[in-house]
Amino acid sequence: DIPVEATGQNCPHHIESFQDIAMGDIVMSNIALTRYTRPTPVQKYAIPIIKSKRDLMACAQTGSGKTAAFLLPILSQIFADGPGDALAAAKASGQDNGKYGRRKQYPISLVLAPTRELALQIDDEARRFSYRSRVRPCVVYGGADIGQQIRDLERGCHLLVATPGRLVDMMERGKIGLDFCNYLVLDEADRMLDMGFEPQIRRIVEQDTMPSKGLRQTMMFSATFPKEIQILARDFLEDYIFLAVGRVGSTSENITQKVVWVEESDKRSFLLDLLNATVIPSEIQDNTGETIEKPGKDSLTLVFVETKKGADALEDFLYREGYACTSIHGDRSQRDREEALHQFRSGRCPILVATAVAARGLDISNVKHVINFDLPSDIEEYVHRIGRTGRVGNLGLATSFFNDKNGNITKDLLDILVEAKQEVPSWLESLAYEHQHKSTGRGRSKRFSGGFAARDYRQTSAASNPGGFGGRGGGRNQSVHGGNRGFGGGGFGNFYSSDGYGGNYSHSQVDWWGN
Image (cartoon, rainbow, N blue to C red):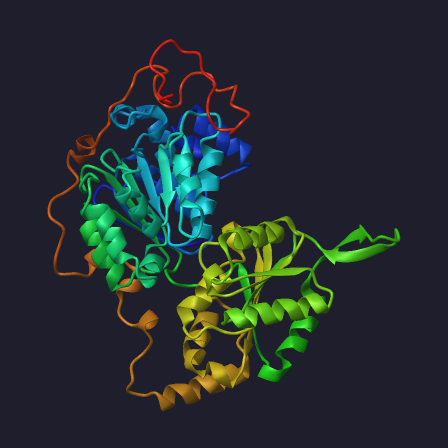
């Protein structure tokens, strides 16, 4: 059982199934197509909160299904409400530019994400859930051809997924306006702050044309809830619900964690032994027609190293040893990174060597084994790395190579293992005891200091938020178009073969698609 804590005034009741709340035919049809059978804990609580037009601050373990938790209710509302004034503004912008196709876009919903990989994954989910509707998702991120992204935007954009830096660039070029953005999502907000995106986020939210809090609905998702996130929540959210699913900042009990002592010089040989013992093979035929065994897409292994040079070297080593593997790190081009992830997901290269650039945001459900070839220098990074396996209720294995270089995280690693009811090596307990006595008086790590990391700080703060929610729900732009005039439209049996998610409608009334 995963503990769930929801605090705030007039908190909506959670659901037990997707049928417990009205989200419309299109959303329900697409839920069935994606083979979602029942909501995850974060979805049970977040969906009714968002459907009730409440602001939300959610802290949940990685891999908990939070992307669907915010996309489903947001798309449901967009389908029902239609584009409002955003379509007219986009058309007027196109006329001002002299060419209708070069209009400025006014998305109704904005999702900010810290990395290109996470932005692409959210966009992929948005396309799945908006399938056979008139809503058009778009994604913009750094490191890719901005010209192609602009051309894609000009085809229409109702739900925008973006990294902060590229979005600011698009806004300054006059390609995106946030005047009619009714839904704002900050996904992995703690990661965005860690990467130094706070100035860009505040520029987007506070210093442009985006509706102020109270006139828009804002949702923040974060794996942890440190002081910086509390300040951001105070500034961006109004009378919000705080949702903590699982022990915030902890690891999932679905992940079996193993810590083994491996000297630096022995790591490569130990890795080979580990891969031979844990990779589940699938039978294929080689060029001679003989049956051989090769790892398949159902047994993906993710190997983390600390440096870009180390990633390249380890990939070369595994390749020479006969393993189909690939790697990603910050020096790889966006095209190379996307190709590597595609090969990994498909099982063509079932072993991926990665630096921390891939530790957050990767949502690959069939990663069975995470190996920390090099342990990170802080425990938060460890939590996020091993969270790539054991996702959405699946079982996973995480193995970490430990030696004298990793003494700084000994105590925190021990606490993580004990908290998740994992086997603790006796040598690790001894090292943690020694390390604790050596560092007496220096204080504990940031992760374990203070009481705000796992609860709604408003419950322990002397300052209380003024007033209740009373009547605020009607303050946002809720122009609802009758009948089939919302984005959802009438029958959605046909669709454009060119993109797979735009409806093919013949209604005589206004075309909300805008073309």
